[in-house]
Image 1 (tube, helix red, strand yellow):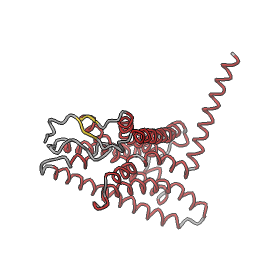
Image 2 (cartoon, rainbow, N blue to C red):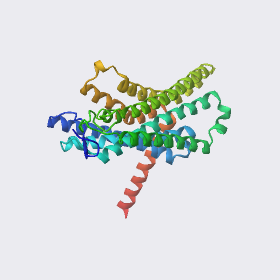
Image 3 (tube, rainbow, N blue to C red):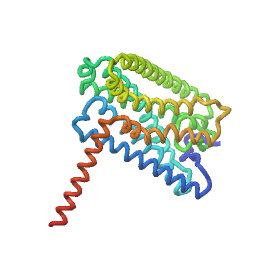
Image 4 (cartoon, helix red, strand yellow):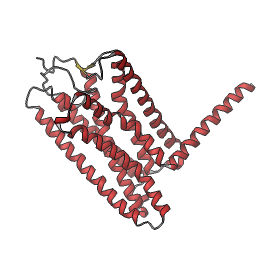
Length: 320
């Protein structure tokens, strides 16, 4: 038996003990991570460099890409390193940092998705008030509120979780540090306090989910009243990517935390945790770029300008 004061490291759950499969896991995660870096990096660069994309919708999308980059960078590199070096260790401080940053970024992302649904609601249902309700200052304040609320929410949970006495070993049944596996190591009823906070947080997230659903009900009603088919298509094209991202985010998280204990197993838990912590940050850029012609055009223009500049530099160097 041990307590939290004597724990200097935690043991993460390994995907496999076979060396060949560990290397396969490393290369698979490396590919996913590079795809997430490339996709989100291109979205951030394109929005930042193209003046035509300096609108509220793309400002929020830029923030979403930043959060996705942070989320996947918190979990995947450490898991890759563990597989490459055949280890399961993570320091106590590193685990606390991973919990704090993951909860912070995931919470901020969910709040930001709620704000984006409000942005789409105003753009489609109240277009004449769009510039007034979503001015540059209002957008900055809403984005800051999402980041700040996520920070405070994570600070509360992380501080409370790591103040609990732990006496059931240091093995976490997860490939990264997360609050529920850590609570299972607690040896006192103090964990009920954190469980209560988690229930409160779930209630807040449920309210946000209801807000998103109600927003899209109003959006759908407004879109169906648009007389032209082209107008309806344009309205849907700006909403479907966000709706797809929300659906992916919520469905994977709900299945991970609310699935029946009878179907729970270590292998299934690992797969589900990958679905909600790794897949969305890598897939979100693809979802947004596939359905957004304006973003695709700006991206191609940026890439064409980059290659043209590179060719001119190479040509100048050759002639000199």
